[in-house]
Amino acid sequence: MSPVQAQTIRSGKRSRGETAFDVAIVVLCILIFVIVFYPLYFVIIASVSDQTLVSTGKVTLFPRGISTFGYHEIFKDNRIWTGYKNTVIYTVAGTLVNLLLTLPAAYSLSRPEFRARRILMFLFVFTLFFNGGLIPTYILMKDLHLTNSMWVFIVPFAVNVFNLIIARTFFEASLPKELYESASIDGCSHFKFYALIAMPLSKAVISVIALYYLVAHWNDFFTGLIYIHSNELQPLQIVLRDILLSNQVFSQGAGSGGNAGGYAQQFADQVKYGVIIVSTLPILIVYPFIQKYFEKGVMIGSVKG
Image (cartoon, rainbow, N blue to C red; front, side, top):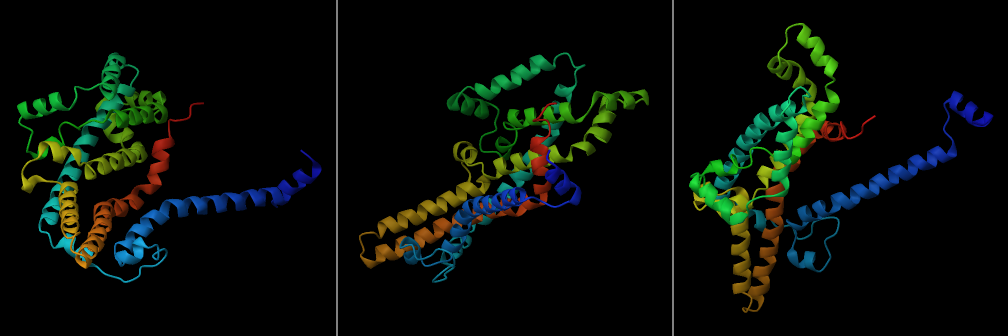
């Protein structure tokens, strides 16, 4: 290190190179933010803008020809409230069941004194790569009387192996064996250690896994499409799909009617953008509350040393 660099460090001043690097990082972060945020922002302003102006590229930063017709068409359909209720129930109940099964399993598989952990982990990972396929799975769900039932959203997806691996790695890396040894000297069992020590120290990974499960349940479209036949049990994603399809049929049916066809297509596009916002807004609202745990929960255990 040169005397000038040493003097700069002692004085607390930053060199020009360090300042330029910081500026470059800030500019790069702003650029990435714009690239990620703008498509979502565009969908928001397009959902309340005149679709003629949107299709001709005249809507870029601010909405023009403001109209809430799309949201009116979506929310006037009573099925959407049933879909919201069902999806909230499936999401909350499913996420609770996921956490109640994934976290204890991950803790057990992280303990070196559990001799069967390697065999069980192999069986878990095997299911990650191989499955019976759609038709055998449907027959199994039918034989278990899970079709056309809310339990088909919860029971078959009770444990996600990817999330199980994340939680197990977290417990292995973040809970030193000395911690359990000192607790066991005081008479602490594995059940007590898990409930009173491991869980309070695992808020980061719990939040991350809960977010993964929450988003998966909220966006679950395929399960409702294949296994649910009753309109009273359909999740929000299926209801929004039906609304979108009905508007597309309307726009195509009026396509040969001159101006009527353009009018119908215009509002069908507005409904399309509105459906995107209605389906994603709840998750976007939840995410900031657990964002502070997200990076920590994902990165802990990923670097060994």
